[in-house]
Image (cartoon, rainbow, N blue to C red):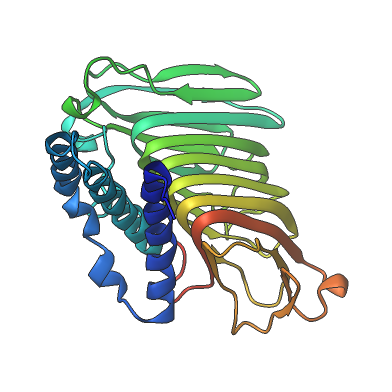
Length: 329
């Protein structure tokens, strides 16, 4: 039998990405044992060097295998333990301390009626909260002191990172602190790349909340929201914690190479739909849910006054329900 050398590398990578979180969930490995495996990234350089040295020999596949195995260990540990913007998995290509930048001039405005909020942060940290009234306020730091791009009107607010030039990790990370009004119903669309987010929407009236995150960590504290109609989350290489209110919500969470924590209040009707995928693990047992096929449902779901219905899908990911310590970080 002849083994395709290219497929060999991919096979080793995928096996490790799936096997490590499964081993952690099964108790064969402790999370703190694998939490710092990203520190072995120099082995990637070693593998490249081996590949160059052996490029004209029958062992030319060995360097690629070392690289694939190293990436598998790194991503597998990421899936098992999640990413944090602080001491956890590093934000590759995005460094510095958000507080090391230069403060930009604060900006503010008013929203009226149903409003949409679009946030797009690349390489940085954001804190978002709700406060009394109909006004919004943005302050924080950037590498140069130039504010992010802001477009606002009576029914909309958009805040986007400015394009970075040069090598990203040489500049300070952006840091935003945004206050949104709780007197105005809000639809929120959030994009986060290589960063961390902390959204506390206590007291806010929310419509649909959408999150698209790549390589980061975010906490969505929605448990204190006075309204929430829908939730749509896409996660690639990162971790997310979502606290939901005691209100009927439908939505979807899709995670690829990441970890998801979901917190729901007691007494709600709950339905969680899953993926039949060996690289995804679900910790939905022990909460009175009944599994039928790929769906976990609480008894009396159809007649419950408050129902939360979520599709939880992904690959190389882990999902947990009401973890010890909560979902708010």
